[in-house]
Amino acid sequence: MLNRIISQGMWGHRWLHFTRNDIGTQMRSFVYPTGPGNWYAAYGVKNLWGCTSVIIASRGGIFLSNIWEYPTFQTRDHRPQSEDFFGTHGFDILRYGNPADPSGESRGFRNLQGPEGFLNSRMKPIVFIITPFTREGERQRLGIETELRYEAKVRSLAAALRRSIRSPEPPHIIGYTRHVIPNMPGAQGDDTQWGKAIVEVDQDNVATEQIRGHDVVAADGSWRLWVEDRVVYEQQYTYVEP
Image 1: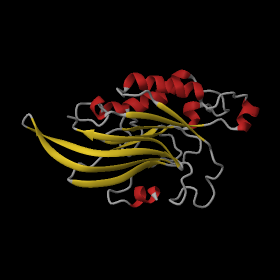
Image 2: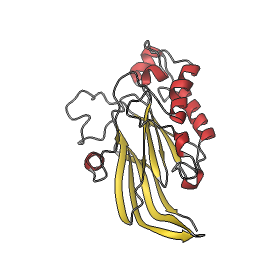
Image 3: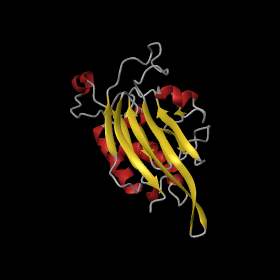
Image 4: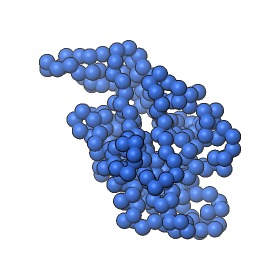
């Protein structure tokens, strides 16, 4: 199962770990190994019981993030958070990083867009926003009529990401159903797909080529995004392109 590949794979632990605290939005990024031979791995976010995750997958690496419902999207009394607060604690942290994260791993995507970064346009990054659907109880209690719980803010976030990341496609917005199981035994373990988003990568034919006197890595491979138990996107890739 992909969960165990992430938790126990030979390349180490590749979950984005986050806990309820005052740190706020957290990120983690991974670069694909470029050694010779075939290579297979997976990367993921778990405990999505209402949070929103921005995932960016490319030919060279993965960017994972978690944005808390409270306080980024809503106030404590379930009212919509202000646009200024959402911009500062949501998009700005995704872009520039979160210095409050003591792990030092919450680097913004801007740091990964340079000539050698895996989110530059040559690496064809694809952006996904994985966010909860509105529950029936929220429709009745809060009067929410949209399909997504945070529809307006998610679409605003998608527009900001579209302006900031040179991707061949606009961001993909993917809704998920919140399952009332976070306290059940095994809900956060490796035996269930609930509350998880996983990028599975299968890369082969990695080689070094000489181009204009420089060593350049070339590879063939594919990656696919799973949201819980379904594949929602798959991409085949080859680089350096002829």
